[in-house]
Length: 157
Image 1 (cartoon, rainbow, N blue to C red):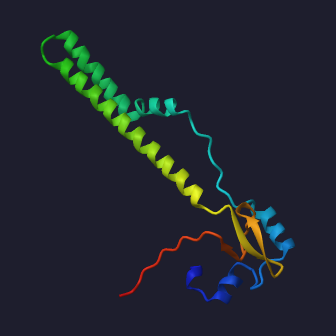
Image 2 (cartoon, rainbow, N blue to C red):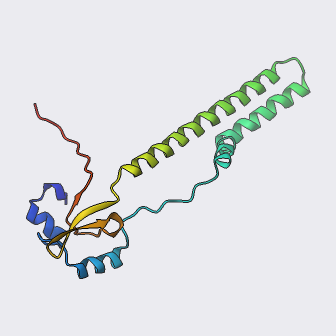
Image 3 (cartoon, one colour):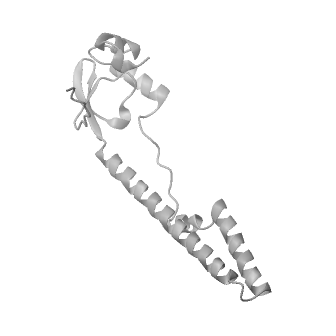
């Protein structure tokens, strides 16, 4: 069932609500049953540990083994150019690790910026009255009007 394809009355009925909003008691019951409306943040790792991990994931370890074999080959038979290969592989590991770390860092910063755009408080219907409520206190079936709304639309033409 796609709620956006239902009529307003059917959409309200599908979440067991009413046009004048939930009662305070029903909202409290639903909040207790389903929990607060929030995404738990996972504790982040220190930045240096995350950088270190980029150089020692599975593929990087394979490259480190290849580097060791190249240097072992150079030590066993000097002058064959294996040291150059070893240094080239190290360069690949470093560039790949730094690039991966930078991408991950930028994604985390983007997600943090998006979280700041989300409203912290909304106006909701409770017992037939519009009241301000923290977003974490929203529950299924709540009729709300965000104070900041982002709209995406397509103009036919």
